[in-house]
Amino acid sequence: MLCVKRLIRPTLALLAAVLLTAVLGSALQTHFNLAALRALDVAVPMAVQLRTTGADLLGFAPGYAGLVAAGFLVAFLATALLRRRWPGRRSLWFACAGAASQLAMVLVMQAVFGLTALSIARSSAGVAALMLAGAAGGLLYARLGARPTAA
Image (cartoon, helix red, strand yellow):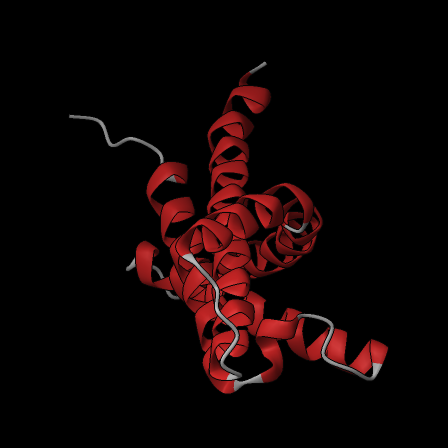
């Protein structure tokens, strides 16, 4: 029973981190796609922007969340192991791990599929935006997953 209790906090923290990153990443992807249309002088009213963002949150974000979860599992486990050797700065470690997982996801998908599977990843700004979303998720994981200190 004690072992299960020790897994509840990090599991819930991981789910929250994945959700945050998937929502941010999906919204960013929508923004980048609509900005590309605007650059071509296509009118994109705010109502269309909001409707498209909502549709992408329902259609794109769940699949993207699966990719984020897989990347976070690997990155956060590796980070936990590295922190045993170099402790401290939990928030920084996990924020960097979240960002790195998103970069790794983009690079692995390009290597496997031979193309950029996420349209946002077609530019360095888009990859950086995904990395920031991953960093936000990593930071949330660090904050929520930490064991409370005894007062």
